[in-house]
Length: 106
Image 1 (cartoon, rainbow, N blue to C red):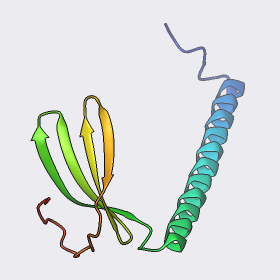
Image 2: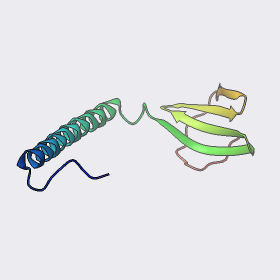
Image 3: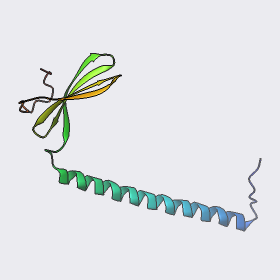
Image 4: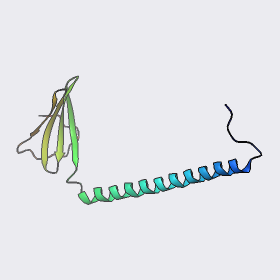
């Protein structure tokens, strides 16, 4: 099946060029909007600060489908258990964060 464009028909080529230009403009606008949104998100994350971030300090694999994560949020340590049945969370009492990244779970 041949394209419905003839080499001697300038209207068809003008239409193709217009469509290409519209697509280029739409792609440029999409790029600008996505860059603006990325910069906005980065600014909002910087406002939160480092103490509010969740940091996974260690992971222990108990079985092929069960893992325990030690997560630090500010000054609080939390054990998060993930399995095929769901997830559970236990706050570790009286545990001050040490700063070590790969320390074993107690």
